[in-house]
Image 1: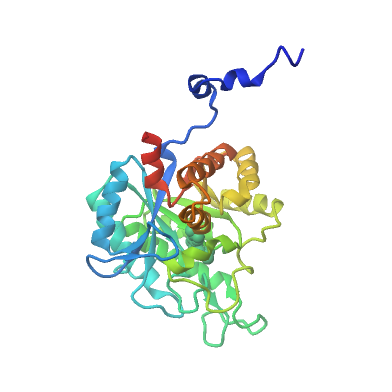
Image 2: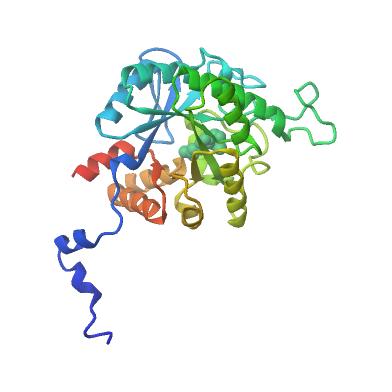
Length: 336
Ligand code: PBG
């Protein structure tokens, strides 16, 4: 057989036929909306590198959370901008810290909205790294390691402590994003010990050292003060390593997995979907958003079509959930 009997274009002839055979359709249920929270009241501070997004004070974030829930988006992901940064990032484990405050207020106003806390030290440390760095006087200082090297095990302790604080304030899901070895088992046992055994852990299991985080570091005010994150985040050249990372997180008790960034790592999403049964999220990061925004401003790309094509591709690759700065827009676009 073959041509001329077989003509794939028959199924594309009308939009009705196209709708019948469409394999991947994005749903609002799949989306997660990130929020940047800062101290103050009535504050909404535009993020220059991410048009359409602002740092919000807790009261404003509550309103935004209501609008997000109203659109049928099930979850928000919280990032905090602390009042003050220090060596250990102490605001991260302060019960009066910005994320615990926001988690509490959002859960109170919109109980059905799932609150996810991005669990990392980099927004809170004065050096901007995702944990404790090696230097004389730092907890766990190791003179055999280079100064400035990120200390794994001392950092775990902070993550465990902060996770309990965020969960007790109301976070339904803790999402550790620092790529520390053992972070999942440490957080799981800290939560369980505190009676928070129902709190979900979504692991940033395969997080790459990516240039696509550029605009975010402006949004969260968390650029590394020196060096980069390549001694803890993954090398973009590696795929098998992602499988090993994920296998460990599954063993340690992760409830959900994540790949980050999304569009440049669709092969990783697909491989993880094929090999692991846990729910899988993908993070369409700041750079993926801002580069389309910038091109759209110049009239070079159509924002809606480009965004929806990217989101659909991420879902087609195998992501069950997508963290995206287009969450609200996407739902509006889906509804036409
Ligand atoms: C914190 C964190 C980062 C992002 C999410 N959590 C920044 C980083 O690792 O440098 C990036 C998100 C984005 O770019 O949208 N560790």
